[in-house]
Image (cartoon, rainbow, N blue to C red):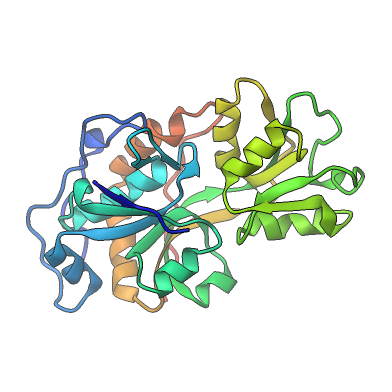
Amino acid sequence: MRFSKLGSAAAALVLAGSLAACGGGDDEVEVATETDFEAGTTMAELSEAGTMTVGTKFDQPGFGLLGLDDVPEGFDVEVAKIIAGAMGIAEEDIEWVEATSDIREQVIEDGDVDMVVATYTINDERKERVTFAGPYYEAGQMLMVAEDNDSISGPEDIADNPDMKVCSVTGSTPSENIREYLANEDQLVLFDIYDKCADALSNGQVDIVTTDNVILLGFVSESDGEFKLVGEQFTEEPYGIGIEKGDVEFCEFINETLQENEEAYLAAWERTAGEVEGTEAPELPEPDECV
């Protein structure tokens, strides 16, 4: 499997039992041996090439985390493998590119990736630049604090504690959503990746980290009791798969592939994000219309 770092219906059923485990199992997603796509479509081009480039996160436990072998693993990674496999592309022929929140639209527009699967919330502003397949998962924004922090029980408490710092990631929807709860802009600290937010919370540079619940649960599970989540989710974050603007055929193919491989999708969850304490098995959402 290659790796680099930057800042018609599904052809075959991907076997649910064959998905690689988040911990790096040896099983592989079954790859279609025969494909038949209309000439000129993205699916035909990728299938003929036998390779594709996927943007994902490298810093999010359960969804996209760079492993010890320098290969990302997690639910987003497995979803991408299901889609690639339906085009006859084996996982070792996928090039993984780090797609941080602030560059996801750019790497799609520049043609650096064929698709982005990276806890990528669908919203109207982003739709102006890319087309989204999905959603394939529904998350919600929450807050993570140190275990001994009893001052924060939800976003409404942030303005009442103006000396506290809130950390999120540049270009993310959580970084924009949280602004309405701040006493002042000085409370907001932005990094390029969530690992830096978690480190800043651990060493006391910030008091709160905010992003989607499933991402925060991953950090809590790895913190050995140092972090906790507080309050309830206060937004809805539908995750989509970003592709080139206007590529309706590819969008529809992705949606059909996931709908026809729901067992593989659920198995992917159980072996990745589903292993994180506090997560619940999702229902595959009905996809939006491709435009």
